[in-house]
Length: 130
Image (tube, rainbow, N blue to C red; front, top):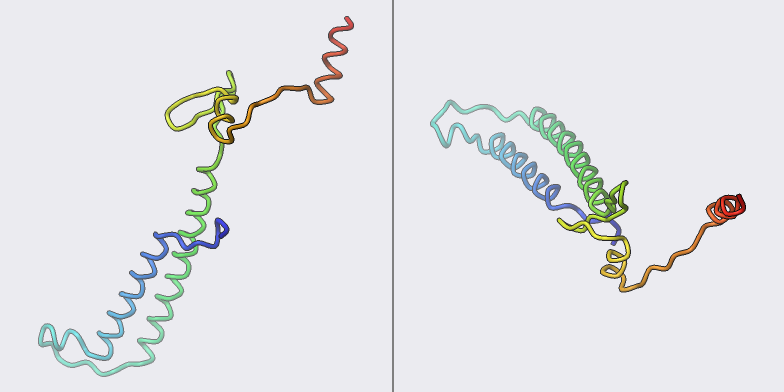
């Protein structure tokens, strides 16, 4: 399952909250809650008003949940970044700062090997010939 395809818990909670809001709006419109709860004067049914209000709530819900989903995806991606000291090249693993060799051994159980890329090799040849 890809990073973007799972629905984050925050988005599910928002969906439940907006569903509860829509249910409360429907109960208010069709059961006239103020009349039953507080003994208020009955209000007439206004289907068109309920449809407009629920459409607006659904649009706001879609926008809020989409923004939350995108923020969650970005946060999960940021958590996968490797933090490396620009001075000593140590890698942050939790609270520890360890060498890149140790990091690779702990993560993959592989040993690091060293070599020179073609550009550095050419530069080292030029430096050693002087």
